[in-house]
Image 1 (cartoon, rainbow, N blue to C red):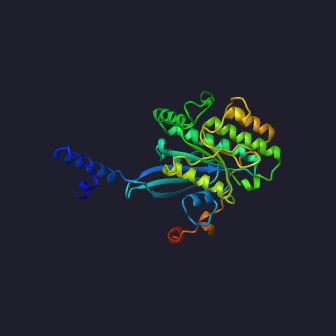
Image 2 (image 1 turned 90 degrees about the horizontal axis):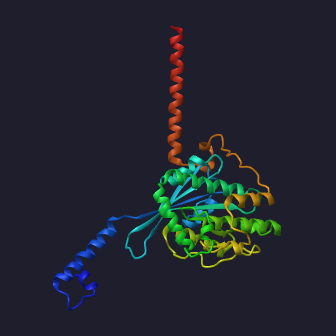
Image 3 (image 1 turned 30 degrees about the horizontal axis):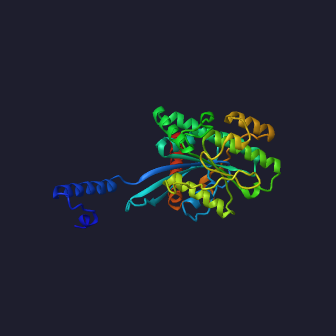
Length: 344
């Protein structure tokens, strides 16, 4: 009876018409309950020590103390979908600790996702301009190669069409861009340190990041945990990528190198940047000529991560200690048996 009362009834409708409406409404409700949570994936990678873990904790509303990410870590967040009752939207979050020798690890989040629900967040350390392009190129190329390897050409084509619509099919520069088939958010971390660098260096960094962001159809936000306004823009944009809301997370555009850069998808142009149409390779060559880049650092792991106090897990550590004890007992028994057989 409650379903009937919630419907708008046309007095000219027959009982059969009303019954059909009730059946359609019931099927709609059943579908919403059985479809389960919708899932999206955000892959966070980039410069080591740029604040990736802190960024994820803020996005997921976690107060966990941050620790160095050794390889690849997984977490997730859930949010009730607006207007869908108890249905939950799920955001899978992967974090890559180091870009060094990471090609196989980069494939994991891509392989475990559906391309039309996948986004990449590349976090760069603005305070180290001599590493910026090295890290950006490694992260971007790694994800692109993984997508080309594990996604079908049909899926890639569909996502390229989607990304063109996101940028704007009437954008003057659209035909000159090398758009990637998934949303990319480039975050320039440690802006509070970057703003104290030499003016010319800041100009080169801003021109480089704006150029590559425009070339691939990405969005760009400079970020500092000490700036509440920038933190909100970053969080809103990650919520948009991870849960679909808000639909328009970046409501402003800022391109002055004397302040934090904020560029939404499709919000820039070659003319405004002040360069001729170009591609990522030339952008990198020009930037490296102005600010020579250091090579990629090798990943350094502790001798035994299991003994690192920062990675303690009580149940796992107890099980590990038990297995170590069993192994030592086995080795001791084997050694005694071999000595006995030698004497015989």
